[in-house]
Image (cartoon, rainbow, N blue to C red; front, side, top):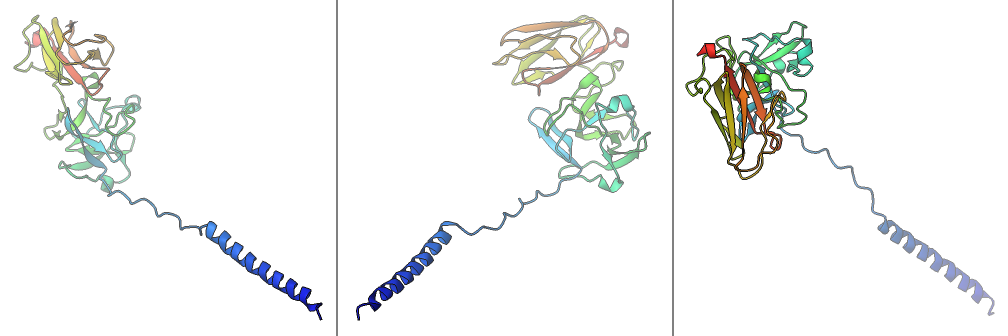
Amino acid sequence: MQRPEPRSRSIRTAALGATLAVVLAACSSAATPAPTAAPSAAPTVAAKGLVNLGQDAKLGAYLAGADGKSLYLFTKDSKDKSTPGANVIVNWPPLLVTSATDATAGAGVTGTLATIKRDDGTTQVTYNGIPLYYFAKDTKAGDFGGQGVSGVWFLVAPTATAASGTIVGGINQTGTPTAAPSAGAQATGAPGAVTIANLAFAPGTLSVAEGTTVKWTNNDGEAHTVTATNGSFDSKNLDPGKTFEQKFATAGSFTYMCTIHPTMTGTVTVVAVAAY
């Protein structure tokens, strides 16, 4: 009568094993968290216009495209007329749209947006009659490497207009080299003076006569350079208290910058002596 006990023991062992398997399975499930749902997409940024308002501490407000890249005007254009050919727009691509309704304004853009047909058949956006362009070497929002290039390309101020036919109102834009000099122009042969202070050239635009020697004085607390955009002159590193001089023998508009602080730009407009 003792034989059934082993069978009873085996049954109990099997039951215990089954219970342990259930417990282990439960532990295993607890150790492996259930997959969570994929995160939802990041919230979308409120839509901006095709033309928006950028802001720089030194230059002030200027127009920018939907991607934040700076927009420029070309002073040789006129109201509703774009003149650069294919060889120019490689470096200065126009702001193009497929439909006039795509020309929308972002917050703070108070001028009139419209479109014109270019000679190549594309549709270009205008601001107060001014054809708008990008600069190919600007790679991101806030770049403005095209500012003042060759004295004809300028950032577009919100007040810029071509209402009279001629384009005016580019940031730091000056007149044509043959125009009458401003009241602050230097006398023929007299030295021109530019002060470097607070990370800026002052005045930012200087009008002088042919033959004038312009002198830059670094009154800032750090080194700067006075480097022509076209490479015609370069002060190299100009330490605090040091000066640099450059004689301008021919009429024209000469833009320059500090290569250490590229946002620092200036222009020397040299007017033919006969214009005086």
